[in-house]
Image (cartoon, rainbow, N blue to C red):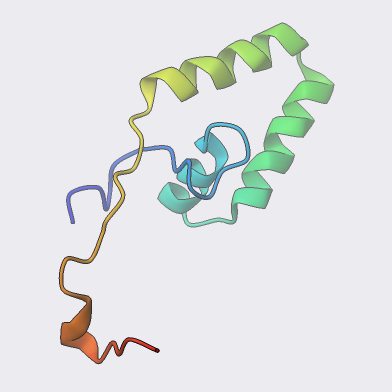
Length: 81
């Protein structure tokens, strides 16, 4: 997998842009922990700086590609009628 060790955002699991979900997956923690860190940063730092930091991360981090299984019938998948 190409994106295993890279830094990317995960819009499928994210609330706004997927930055917290991508950072959480990269560093092996829950996305909720990263969100709490962002909230703590909002409380202790100037709001504009934190919002700008998040926006820069959302623009610079590439989105995680969707992996679609091309052969769903090979692994015991049965269609339900």
